[in-house]
Length: 384
Ligand SMILES: Cc1ncc(COP(=O)(O)O)c(C=O)c1O
Image 1 (cartoon, rainbow, N blue to C red):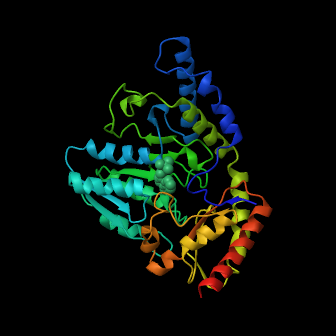
Image 2 (cartoon, protein in one colour):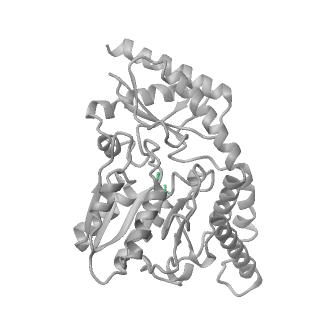
Image 3 (cartoon, rainbow, N blue to C red):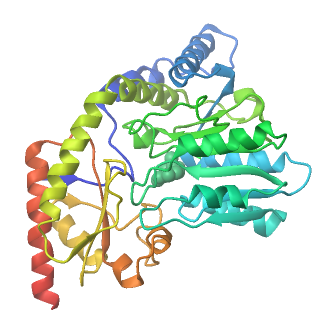
């Protein structure tokens, strides 16, 4: 049996999504900018996707920019905003962001004299809201927060963060709130307007949609500078012929995620609890995920076991888990997230990330729980 438990890294394409995309590869292949009927048909499809997503997110269709990934949307949100300012300012983010945020922040501070404050987190991965407020200075113009952490599943208190941003903006300061919702979309409720979000990032391949698809919501009051220039597609913010098959697939994946929201969430919770029950029977374990985190992520360590060894032993038995974020998971370095929540290098090096999908079967979860338990014991008997 194979059990894929790395759904935070990526998810398989749903058959309905693949089906929706199919005609756009070879039959409806027009360029949405072309004046003839093939192009017009594709432009219409593109507009329909944008209108549908705008309605789903409760925003205006002109505020949506299709991108190639969550990474690109994060780059466009942060760099696009910063490059549009007259002079470098101050940004607040957290120490546990995805690298597509952290490395952009490094770039801005090293190459463009921006000042960046990285909020620490507690053992649960939560920022301190008082500290967030304390960091706000007269030149703070952007706050960038990952709503659900991709390694441990912590859910930040978005409602309170949104209220803080609103309060300062009512006092004549202009702070833009960017939310990286790549791991949140489809897993927790998201209200853009209610939470005073100005910029929001979503990625297609984390929600059973195609790779190469992403979305940035940008409030019409916020001005961004494009990162690349050309034909002026996407309101001039993302030149390049639109990847229509990916956009069609992304839209279908979003539609299914919303239509099946409640059933998927209750399935996820079921698998989460069932697997956790097995895992907590394993001696000398420690759970790194908070108890009230997103139910698709369990980060767990086993004392004395190197995560790299465990991942490969499990893989040989058909269980796919990861050591941390996929983009850094093959590197030997210690996870910045696990470090930030206070783990020692040994603890961090003994931790794995298990990320679930709603589409497992009871047998899969039973098998995974049993095999992980057996494998931890097996490795302990070999190496101790
Ligand atoms: C929180 C978070 N933000 C951004 C990204 C980047 O998304 P993409 O893989 O679509 O570039 C990821 C991917 O793992 C993520 O988990």
